[in-house]
Image (cartoon, rainbow, N blue to C red; front, side, top):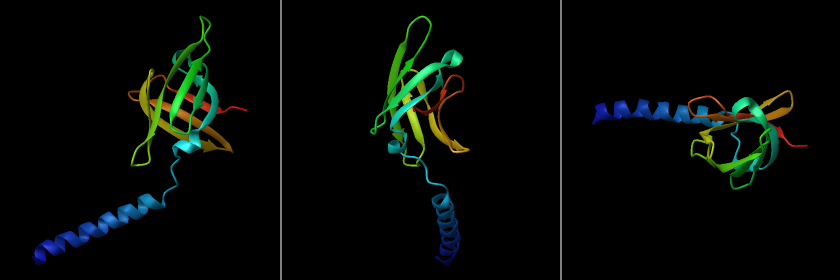
Length: 123
């Protein structure tokens, strides 16, 4: 019994410290942070694209192409880990919000690479 307690106590301390490090990191964006209109480039050739995200995570895209506009859509979900994922007509992947020099960029990063898109808030 003493050997078991000697093993469990250090393991619990490590778990608690790991939880503190994770909790002290920068807050992760939620679905409400994404809601609204975004503009940028996405898809093959980085076509001009409009992205509209609702507060519940449902999104719609419209790519403006020479041969005619192309609509698509899907849903963004928040995982228990705090990560954001998208799943839709153009694939699945991770959603990232990045800020630099006062500019926020929303990135759709597809699983397996390629494609995706980068968007900024619509004026």
